[in-house]
Amino acid sequence: MSVFLYSNVTSGKCWETMQHDCQIGLVQMESHIGEREANFRRITHLAEVASKKKISFLCFPECALDGYSPQHASELGDTIRSSATSRLKECAEDLGITLLVGLVEHDNRAEKPYISHVILSPGKEGMVYRKVHLGRSEQDYFTPGNQFPVFSSHGTTFAVGICWDWHFPEVAAIYSLKGAEIIFAPHASPVIAGDRKEIWLRYLGTRAYDNSVYLGACNLIGSNGKGKEFSGGTLTIGPKGEVILHTEVLEERIFISTLSAERINRIRRFDRVSMKDSFFLADRRKELYHELLELDVQR
Image (cartoon, rainbow, N blue to C red; front, side):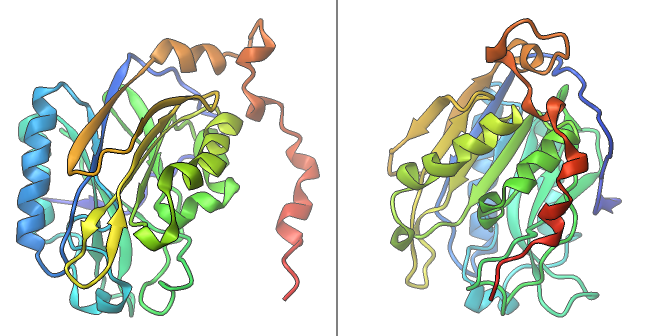
């Protein structure tokens, strides 16, 4: 792999149209700690399956390549230019598919690793998103990211937020204002956290509805090989908060959703003719929102 870009941040109002309908694949898979090569083979096998189903984007869970265990973070992963990511880039090129793969990323400029997602698209340089909001159980073991990049491929603008990121409404708003039409939400949520459907539907539908975006979420499933169990789950939500896909199948597989370009393009038109197609962000009064930055939780 020649170059890995760390940011593709855009600013301003860049709402372009989604060029055509898009098929996304959301993966729930088992990923064992310290078994990067075996996890890699699972990922590439699923990518081959996805390519035969004409999927454009295939999103894997948080830390799918290395397994998820904050306590073992220092022992896991590699730099962004590792052999594994180079081979994943070749896989994306060969199959003509965009792969979004979670991993533990080491960087010599940071004392602790990042929870990262690499974005590997045909004909493009590799990109990376680093988890910005770390859960409290992660903060002793990882370095937080500090950027919200957006990406484009297959005629679509998209972005990634990882697990805990989606408890912060500002993330989805920033991505939508930067032009994202699809936001991906890979997770590593353990069984102990509770039922994914019940929890996700409390807030992920709101993230999609308020910001007129498609949202695709996926989760690890099964054991990490170190005593932690994950509950699985995939969910696709439309730009009005409607559930397009929800699964409760407890096995490793890909779940596919077709996202309508006409649907989101109609909502994002400025000359809308119906309240039901309102793009709420277009009517913001941001000059009044300074308090959002000034106020804080009293400790």
